[in-house]
Image (cartoon, rainbow, N blue to C red; front, side):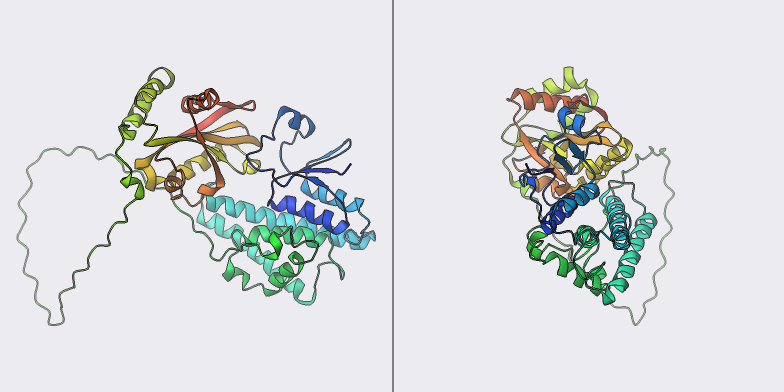
Length: 419
């Protein structure tokens, strides 16, 4: 029976395993349809893989969780052993580049990308410092590849598989066209490897969608401070302004018409009886289960509004729960332009290094995209419309509002509201 690989299609760490297997000539049992929507973190899964993340490999009684270890094991099974040299010195060279791929490309890019996306607290000097280190490493790699086709020897090895998998992650992330133009040898090397006949299909048919222009940080909207009431005092009369002397060079500035505001298509929807702002007040002032939820069921307009479950796609990247909560806050801040159309209750469930982000949105209309696409990172989340006439959906909805939601044994530890 072929070893069973489990992981999300398109994930860079899954790619390195698939590429290792393809080059080594090893067949894997891999379900390409596996996605973030798959209910994979079950008690049975955690019993087998207590680390609780993907990808994983099962081969008889062997259970592996780290993609590097999986790739090395898979490579060892195949008839083509040139990808994993047996000579100790050559093997050490391969290992050097494998560690480089993880520590100098994968990790640095992941942290910098997390800062820019709001998963970590934003600090421009911190982001720029980490990103600059990443570019320095790529510049060093560019010099190494000046006279090389591959990193170790004259054929593709695991060194190339690891480094190119990490490069695709960076090239489709923060390292944009302008940055890539400064490392032509790395780009040439990257294109050579991903177009190898055995690898092209794994690497998006050799034509991944590379980043043209790096995304910019979107700061949260500043909250307006409540103004203190001014004491009623008579205003002193203003002194008349002195006439401004006429300058011969002065010319009247032309009137520039203000740019017309773009009308939101949501404003053209038929008028609804459900007052979203009133719901926000009821939710804030009443007990959630005994007051706010009954009010909601009485007033809700099923045609004018809809209810959605929202789930973060990359829960395996979450670490400390307070950082995950900050990430939810950042996501909500970037939804500011849709405040009049949206209410949200989203939380962090679980514990540090084993948590998920999930919750509910109540929004205008029946399509989630026009409401959430104002946030640059909206595609980092999955959206599923809920039907509150369905008992399971109703329980999830109410628990998310009440902040006592439990999913797969993970209890609500922190949350944010978008009001």
